[in-house]
Structures are given as C-alpha cells and as structure tokens.
Length: 88
Image (cartoon, rainbow, N blue to C red; front, side, top):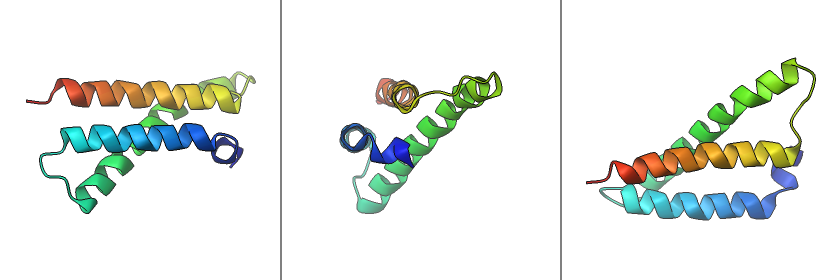
C-alpha cells in the first residue's frame, strides 16, 4: 500500500500520461474505451514489473518503493512507445 501512498504525484503523472496515450491511440474516444485502455496499460505495467520484484524478493533483496515505481514506469513506457509506433 505504501507504493501507492508514498508516490501519489508519480501515479498522477502516470495516469495523465496514460490518458494522453490512450486518447492518441484510440480510434474512438469514449469513456469505456479510455477506461479499458488505462486499465490495460496499468495492468501490463504492474505485471511486467512483478517479474523483477519476484526475482529480487527470492534472492533476499526486495526492491524499495522508488525502485518499484521506476520499474513500473519503464514497463509503462515500453507499452506506450509500442502503442504509438503501431499507429497508422
């Protein structure tokens, strides 16, 4: 829970950027499409960031909240760039 509470501005910035990328890459901008797109971006970023979290947890060196946020952000950037690159 501290991951969310300690980094409110970081999450707000990610949400704003996600809304922008979702609006740019959507064929039809509706509330439902934006909700699905935002949820998909965050789900991908969190699942992708869980891999290093698990590895570091297994070796006994858990990530700090800053490291976890950086990992989530990198995963988010990978998906955002991929979405923007495949736009027609």
